[in-house]
Length: 77
Image 1 (cartoon, rainbow, N blue to C red):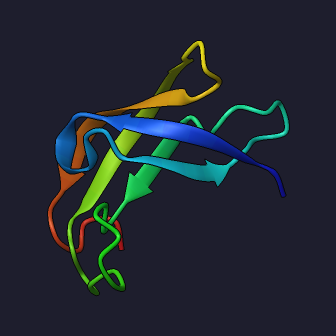
Image 2 (cartoon, one colour):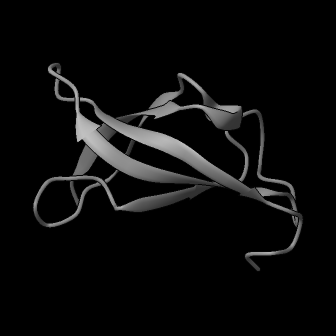
């Protein structure tokens, strides 16, 4: 499986840059949910989920994922 680099904009993961799995066309998924954006340890069970939406690629090949909404604890489980 290939990966693509994304920069998360807004929300709790603002300015986080990391690889995510690429779709068959080479773009990141249309939506991505982060539970523990700072990466410090395992994701806490039942923590809030943060929804991001794919936007566009930057000139350096990094895609932008923009913050949409935070789901309260347990909403996406």
